[in-house]
Amino acid sequence: MFVQINTDNQIVTDAESNERLEQRVRDKLARFEQRLTHVEIHVTDVNGPKHSNNDKRVSLEARPNGHQPIAVHAEGARIAEAVSSAANKAARALDHLFGKLADKTRH
Image (tube, rainbow, N blue to C red; front, side):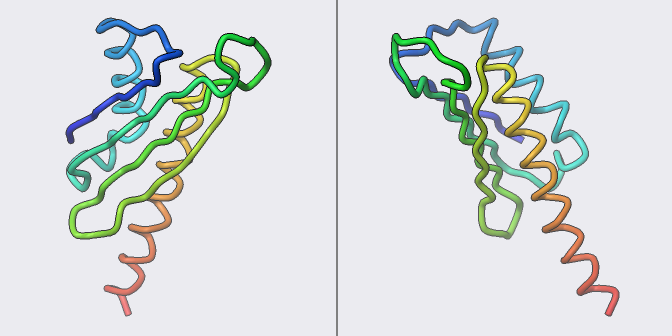
């Protein structure tokens, strides 16, 4: 599974922090690793230099093999919090997708 992190120009980032975010997503989606080709994460600062609660927005797109991509969004006060929330939402969406597929093959 290839993980790509994109940030807007308001987000200050480095290789180490990107690696921590990538690992967080990999941990949350580990059980789907063989079924995903690509995970793309977009991090934006909604309010720019103004600080407020929940001003970091994360869009996460997971691309399962042979299926349409699944996109989720989350907001948080900190980037790590928003990434974790988005990864949790993606895991629930993938559980739903693969659960429906398993139900179809059983019937």
